[in-house]
Length: 316
Image: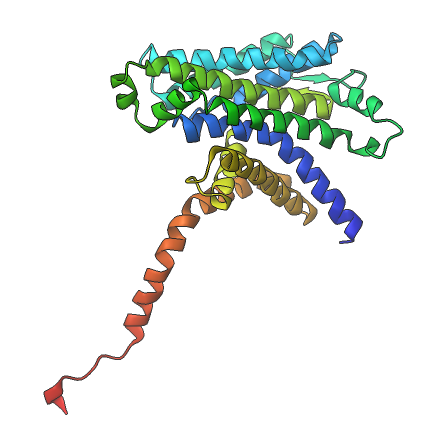
């Protein structure tokens, strides 16, 4: 593989990784901070893509971004309501919302599974026009995504240091302690899920505009991709580090995950095997720290078995 192809492969992985990094940062808030496993990610990602595509097709590509985030926040509010006010377990609530969002997405697009956007103005085509005749003309996608990810990371770093953000983190650590401190865990959980789902929908919106196409199943498996990226980032940067470093680690994990995907495709791996690759990465990321701790004990045990038994003193 030539250096030019390697650079092109790395840039493609970086662009897709930054798009997915928004979903990874959403799980960083809901899963790592709030300790809620939100399984509505797939449907919420597609919801953001649907709303973003429809608003962009109507001629308002910039308005599509806050529109998608509002739709995602509404999805998060529904998930939180099922959990905190209707007694539905978090995993089941996410599954129910994810299932219902499929029908909602089809209804929004007029029962169309795809929405082509080849002639639609998007934030990426607008950035391409602004960067025309500059040295960065060919990097417009990368620049847009770097700005979006940087803004989300800065927001999370600031938000999680506020009184409300600290309450959300405390809710994830010990909800009973938060309740005894006269803080309503239902409120903090609702806010956390609304914010995280808003980021997930923003990721879907940017993905649809970048690919210039909406497809009803484009969010399938996104929760696995985001979780794997988050776990990879957790291996790179320990959870005992500060929030900014952990957020940057999540972004790096998203890039590394997409790089593995790109290398797998470059090695002519069948497309249907990519989900198996995702599952394998998740298993390795989860079991890696445990196996690393157990390896010295295993080697010690094997060494003790191979060591010859010493003879008793009276046996000579």
